[in-house]
Image: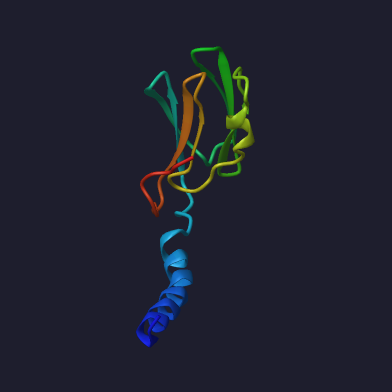
Length: 119
């Protein structure tokens, strides 16, 4: 390896934290939650008002709780309960889904930092 190769490696490693900080920060806080069931948007609700919402899906009812500007699945009839374990969603673009029950929630509003998420 030449001196230029080492300089390139050092500069690249020095820039990685900067790229991470600018590209992978969370989006701004959301102000609404969009609830989807069976592939169709069913409700758009404000995150300012605390409430519990029952959404009918393919397997039964999913319960979504909105509290203190955040939303989450509280219960769902699916077997893995991954939607419940995903926890509170509060930033724009965050998503939680119960795929077997075909119900999902997405936080809207604020500034989005990215347009897709891979699980």
